[in-house]
Image (cartoon, rainbow, N blue to C red; front, side, top):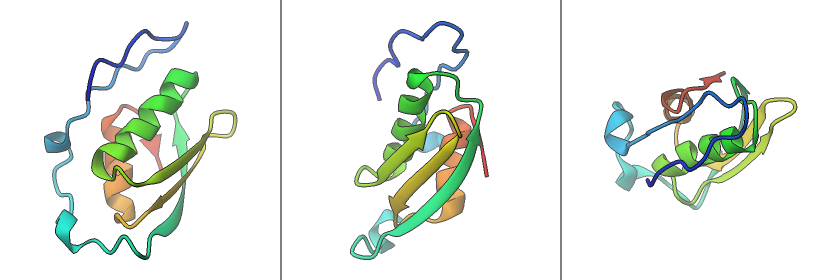
Length: 100
């Protein structure tokens, strides 16, 4: 993952998520991407479009084929992925946000 780029005014987040930072992830070879699950999350701490990009990038770090939709105003994040919920929560939280 490259440099996160410039931050928007007021944004306090500057994640540096590496796959190795996400300990406890399941074995990628055992995932069944033919049957991805739609999962919904409530994410707090996002304040700008840069934060939205960070959340999307965090999820895609563990699942590059995931479809991630973020609503900044409500904090709702929809993820289409076969990865377990706890792995996605860990990825988002390692990026500096609170996810439920």
